[in-house]
Amino acid sequence: MELIPVILSGGVGSRLWPVSREAHPKPFMELPDGQNLIQKTFLRAARLEGVVEILTVTNRELLFKTEDEYSAVNKAKLAQGFILEPFGRNTAAAVAAAALQLEATHGPDAQMLVLAADHLIKDEEAFAAAVANAMALAAEGWLVTFGIQPTYAETGFGYIEAQKAAPLKGGLKVARFVEKPDLDTAQAYVSAGNYYWNSGMFCFRVGTVLDELREHAPDVVAAVSKTIEQSRQTSSSKYRCLTLNADAFGEVPDISIDYALMERSSKVATIPCDIGWSDIGSWNAVSELTDPDENGNRFEGEVLSHGSRNNYVNSEGRLTALVGVEDLLVIDTPDAVMIAHKDHAQDVKHIVNQLKACSHTVHLLHRTVHRPWGTYTTLENGERFKIKRIVVKPKASLSLQMHHHRSEHWIVVSGTAVVINDKQELMLHTNESTFIRAGHQHRLMNPGVIDLVLIEVQSGDYLGEDDIVRFEDNYGRTDA
Image (tube, rainbow, N blue to C red):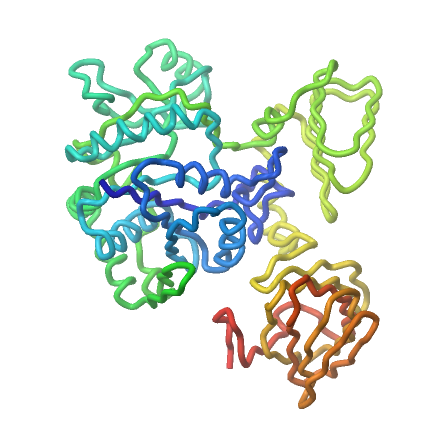
């Protein structure tokens, strides 16, 4: 039986700011063991029996970053597909698009396992057993959810109430879904024994979920089908890709798969499981991944502490010192520091909302920004000038482009650069440089087998990243 895991990678994770940002969201956060959440999700899915392909639904701006993360761990060269959204439209749209795509490529009898890119599962053996049970029920026509056995009264999760009578083989029929409860209600759910945390993971036969969507959410299926008809399908030796048309996708209803289908269908079952699951939904959850010291402190990075207890510090770039404080979360990045009391970990998202309201870019970008060709890091930003460190991957190339308002001076630090500067083509080695005037077309390429590193000094009356006109581009970003 063919199984295609579908990884949904669309959330921002605003409660994990300042590490999680719109251009570097929660799935790409590196954990203490060196892997990030999207890599762990990919590997967990790839190890399941019967998997023939992994399909990822994500924002089109994150394609190349996701591809890089997968390439680092996809040693078996498992087939991959991508569905690229121009913007988020909630999970019903993502699931419908994945199901329609899989129906076209694998047929209605294939099974899809819907996984979130930013969840952590510690017991992979138990997870694999739960998936096997889910596949058996899905083959019988059930829409299967994974209900997490609650270990405490959590008010931040939705719950699944399972029917106690007439259990199914390996699972239970779902009586209803319940919104996030207050504390007293959550405690009652835990005591009842037939309530489970809603993990947001699903398994179903492709034909079944499309039939149920057509019955309970026909407007979603119709709008997504229309979008796919107007979208671009491409394929390469690396992956298949469906890039959704933005205008058509904007007409798709913005609704979750829970509201659109799971709460309406009579064919919903749940697999109760204890798999070491966490949605890593706050800095408190992240802190639990690090062992405490004798004072209950958990530290990532170089930290000195005196008279301090029960704190979590994530500070990889510089020394952090704590003196006489308790129960704090301290998250330090090169351009932002967040300090919160542990009891208010869920409120970090309000700071992100304030940043958006005042159009501060620190909610969107890190100082180091990933691009399909490599990275750039802003070292200094002043009046009429900006200094960047640019790293270009081997054999990669920036677009042929032009700026209206700024000139640039490039100095090679290491590696070899091929530069198009107006009508000249130059080869630059370490300590060599070139000057590019505003209005001149230019391009930077790395012909070598090691990273090209250079320093870029920009000068001009406007230095925004939107002052770029692209003429040719290897990554589909051409403007002209």
